Image (tube, rainbow, N blue to C red):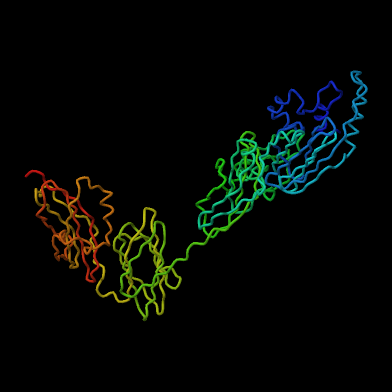
Length: 568
């Protein structure tokens, strides 16, 4: 029984000089035929001067044909594998003589010609096995029927084929420069800068092109087709053709997925529905980036991970034909993270620490003597900061800190403590930290839960303002300062002055109002008021209250802006 693709071929094969021919560049209907994708998709005939995309099922060969009508004709055939190696072979069959029984109704000569081509192997011109974009080119080819056989032994895959008898004038694939390598010109922890020589297609042929850069962690790609196959792995199921008599039986839901996922042999009789196939197979995680950058030939890749190897490919794409050529890709390992310098904490001494936005700092505390307990005092001056404490590698503490907090941990002879401070996403963090094995008098003052300053609107005059703030059960020293500000003083300006670790020592003496001590065993009564005099009518003033601990360390309450009355 003659296979269906041979029947389809003979429907198109010339029976005489006046009958229909295989589509070539000389045919008037070529433009119409090339627009009709289905014509070539199903016909096993390669059109002259157009790239076709098709598919291969694993271990199922496929055959295409191309006609050269005259001797001494240039010929170029290019095969582009997509994401799987191919085996392909190009051979030549001489065209049989036209039948002498033209118009007689006698089918005998036609049957003989069919049998002749089927039985003859033809002359092998070229063969290749691999995943490179490979081509056959000849400046003078004999007339005949050229036969292209393709096979994929690894998995179901897509591929592209381009054949032409006018390779000099076509030039559909963009040209590469004499040095087609991609160079790494700069290397950082999270960035890599790439450069390559421009394609002559833009400068000499004046054709519109663009460059596409591909980044991944696995390997270099040899074609843009392979990149797109990787990016659309989950969509391969939808790209599978519908089964027909001219296709090998296959499991529709398994198309496009790795062979090790196949549980049963392909079965045309018992294939699951497309919906079921989509449900069973989840979308694979594709760790690959494709960025098209126009006609620039230098590009900086950012947001990479430190100390990680990446592979970089550049493809030049003809914008008119959408056909592409690959430069010789490269790879590089980003630089390591800068090693964190560990700050040594001294027993009972306050240390200032600055942490970058989303950054981290490491501190080490190694008590010189045996101890039963260790106390950590943390004062976060701005936004919250995360603290982790490990003793000899074991995690003892992990939590966020705002304002002043104290942590007491059980000690251990000759123990060493590693403290990790991590900044937040909002901005940089500033803090003060004290570690001690002898927490007699606190170096950090105790604070109430509410550190706001309250202003009494009804008590405002043209020259004074009355404010109040909360205290604690512990006796502390409080100092209040004032500073005249513009009427348009806003929240952003106030926020810049909210660093609680900045003490009164940075303030001008003229800004100081007074200092006083107070406390109360009854927290309900731990409130103090103060009237600030000597102010100017209709002016705005920034008020700050500092509480100073036994060790001289101060903490600032939340700033408050008050405005005196203009008329009294």
